Image 1 (cartoon, rainbow, N blue to C red):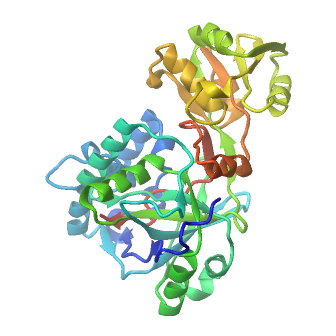
Image 2: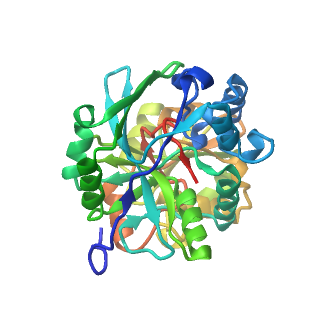
Image 3: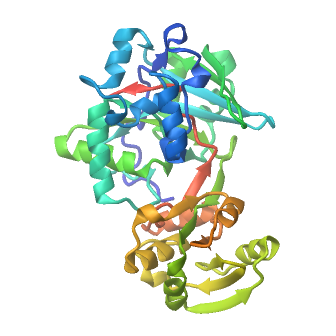
Length: 390
């Protein structure tokens, strides 16, 4: 990505006073944290809201915890959460298969003007940004971190790798469900470590992986007041704990088959079994998609100039929008098998090739952006492990 104009412009990440659950009041941490809100379907969200008055999902929207003032303030009064001294946090998430990811939790300084060190890669919807501004103001809390990717390595990555020796171990938990995650949290407050991270990260550039609308909302708030804002972020070092980058496939109403075929620059039949579709997807030229419906599969060529964003997802969404499709009728699937199996007689699968991190960075370097909901970086940090008051 391009070097920030004029060199380093002061701190980029800052320590913050984290807000953490008091388990003796709120209950076990593993039952209170949750996947990011975009990964929760209606049924799972409803189940989480009813499971505890303190589950982090209550902080996603103000209407989930109605009452006087932000729910997080009531939780503070109840003693269900408490604020730490300022510092950085390292969160380790470990799956049953032993795979481990570590995230540095910090406050990202978001000014009214960009200085070239933070790079969004997806487009946003103005109405959704405005809604997020209202929501952040009403809830008064960063209930989940925005995920950002750093691939510079160096001093901060080494500190994160040695959090056990450098920080205070402040929480451990294990989530339930069919794919449990073991969580450990370290609080880094030692002055040399804190100052070292702040200085080191001021020289880095970050790619927003997940949370584009929240980032855009906080930037809009800074533009409105002229005063820099802060936003809770989880930094993942791609060299040490690489995230997987997958496509978000579309499951759309079946009547859109003709609109997609008519908009294609080329159409080729292929076998519709899973192995053939998977092979076709891997061999797609730049911008192609695979369309699957009722035992039939087509490989479509696309016109990249049709869409305002880069990538096949932007082309698909442009065609759907021109056909008058409501976004709420489209499901986004990060798992190819799920996109294939969740089709039905009234739905079709629009399969998008998997981009590489290099593809994404190339688009950003050219000053462009990917289409909305085109990529998904995984695993994502859990919501609720550490909160931040706004």
